[in-house]
Image 1: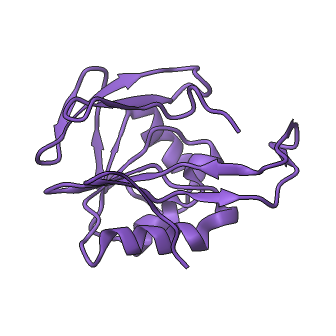
Image 2: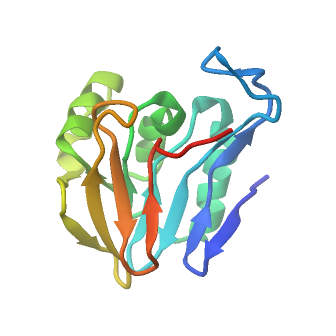
Image 3: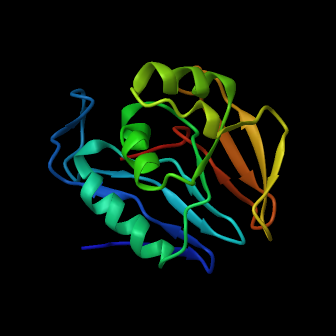
Length: 172
């Protein structure tokens, strides 16, 4: 059963909550669980910001399908390759074979290392300061290496003034 949250008229949280874990990454106590955040931008082009951990894949895929409402997924924007953000990338891209990937060069390298499927023909590389228009929204990319891992990238939506921060500023 889907569980989404409207953030803006054309931006929907499609992540999932995981309340089964007593510890995140086996270290950090999370008595209320964790939320795996993923957002879907419904513009002229649809853009999914990251995926989720495999532990919540069923709800995540239900949320994405529900939020798309029959539209196709045009882009998957990958900000971070840690499994809680990226474990379901391969499954998502197999479900949505027309979706293109927006990512930086380090993410591209890691995709080939993490997954068996070859998605290289579907990748549109972005770098620091590049802009991407999904229609009404203009997204700008900011590299943030070692915020957590070396490939981390943030995305700023100039239209609605929203910063998608990957793993920065996260809390439980």
